[in-house]
Structures are given as C-alpha cells and as structure tokens.
Length: 222
Image (cartoon, rainbow, N blue to C red; front, side, top):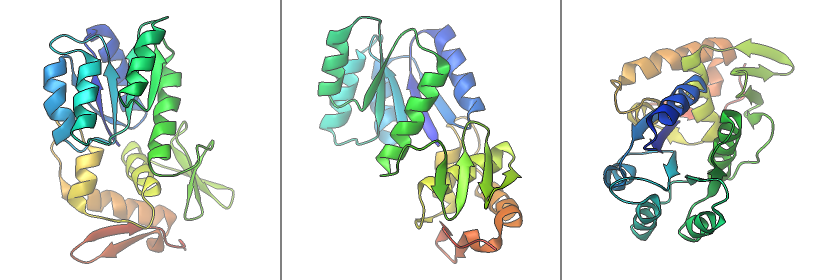
C-alpha cells in the first residue's frame, strides 16, 4: 500500500516514515502544502496522512481543494493537542479520521489499517481475511486452517494488497504503483517473482494469471 505523508516537522516525519516502512507501507513524504495539492491528486495513493499546520498552504485548504476536485483517497489529519476546532473543521472538509499530537505510532498504524479496510468495505477485524487466509498485519505472517506460514517483507506487502482487493484483476503496473514509493524503481518483473513465491507457499490457485490483464486473487488454494 502506498501512502503520502504531508508533515513539515522533519524529526517527526523521519520517525513516521521509518515506522510505516517497517509496517510494509511505501511512503512518499512532502513538507509543503503547495506541493501536496498536486502530488496528492496525481499519484495513486491508497491513503494520505495530512498535517494541518503546513507552510505554503494550510492543510485544511489542501484537503478542501482535493475534495472539491473529486479526490476520494482516504485522508487522516494530524492536529495539535486540544485543538477541537481544527478537528471539526477537518472532518467538515472531508477528512476520514484524525489523530491528535502527540500520539503513539501504534495508534497511527491501527487507524491507517482501519481506514484502508473501511475504504474497501471490509470489517476491521484483528486479522485480514480472504480466500481462506488470515493475515496478521502486526506480525506480517499468514495462516490457513490453523497452520502459520512465514512471509518475507515483499511477500507480505503483495499479499496484503491482494487481500484488500479480492476478486479484482490487477495489472503488474498497477501493483508496482501501489507497492513502491516514488523514489524506487517500479519493476513489474519483480512483481511476477513475488507472485510465484506466494504460489509456492499458498498454492497456485490462490493467485490466478489473466493473460494480457494481470492477476486475480481469490482461489481456493491447494
């Protein structure tokens, strides 16, 4: 999953990027509201974390512009402690959730997890479930019929994306756009390698190839 973090506090941003990377997210970071206006609308982000106190253009105006232009990407806003007026204005402007500074990184992780599932009509349960698989996002492993299967970091990122988009046909280029940040080369051939690794661990039927189209997750395994 690919996220955009818009935060001008550099130490906090560094901490958040590192934590989100460890959780398997690809993260682009911006510190200026003017840059965020364009990039948030032009790149295929799965979720945006937006600070309201930004240089260049306040976060509230950035959010209002995105929503006025029809951007539906989930947005989680960061606000100062006790600033209830900011929270209300942010929610009125179209934010999907908010988090008050200072906050625990695990709370941010859980709120992001909940928003990503909600955006796809999925229940926010302890484990992500699809096609008979149970994905533990905290431990980055998957189980089936009570048997736990270990995953590499790359396999976890890919499987999580598949499980959040069951039964959908996803092209290699689409997967690459959502699994890598803007700084890393998006090699669609690497996607094929990781798909084959998942098939060896979970069964070939779990991820089906649609010739000329991409992949479809949601078989019976085996």
